[in-house]
Image (cartoon, rainbow, N blue to C red; front, side, top):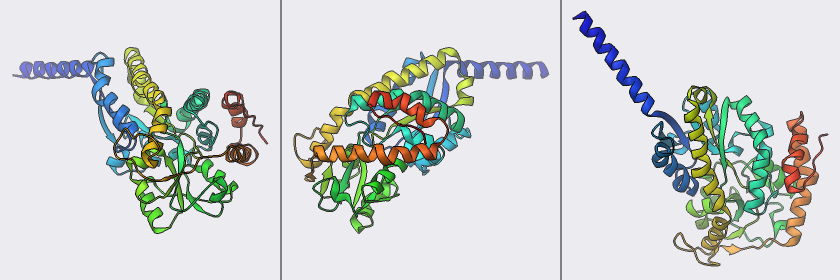
Length: 348
């Protein structure tokens, strides 16, 4: 009887080991469940394609931070503690843990998707270091939301009209940018914005055009200024470093390649067209491929708006960040992102 019990235990362990070898399951927390990035790229990859691209070596159990009822700012902290293996959320949500991370998403540094991609690629070595040191994590990919534009429940005709208005910012650097323009940057969670616009808590709010369309911001807004005052809101996909180190070389290679080819690259490929489609859907200026077009007033940014925004960025916003970040971050940014975007920044 004793021998039979030992053999049964050995058989159970062997069966367990065989199952583990067939598919290492990753606990994954994605970005906002109702927005296009998750629905079009995150969910299809983790739910359907991961097993295929890893040859059955990996699988995933996927949820999102809003479905879990946790804030975006908690995603990387909880991942670093091993609560789950992989986290995806907007990098700006985590800047309270790292001032240096603000420089991944600089307002007005890129007005088109190609330039935004170059800026993110240039920043990648800095981002890798930040996630390793601050969040005990390995970065697997960085994908964009559409550029963060301005929704207003008030009449505006140019960038100057934001002066004196209360504007929901999409990050610390964006808040500084708004202050430099004479507006008041207000920190409000994404899900709370429609009510805040409706009640007049804020006059305007910044988010991705597609995000605003899907979340119904057109119901509580009248004007749309499609200038990327909030940058491109990059979403970082990262894995807990301790978990990463338990994976085989084959699993690591499959995971990195899978995220790049099925999530990161496709999201960048559609980013520019997505912006154009989102504007059409929000304003009715053009054909809306997603559903009913809405009737927000389209406020085109002028050359003067663009010039003023860039001047404020260079003279006030970036120097403020460099001073707060300290160390050699300003030089690293200038040598990488600054070089591909034509912006020079010196540490104080």
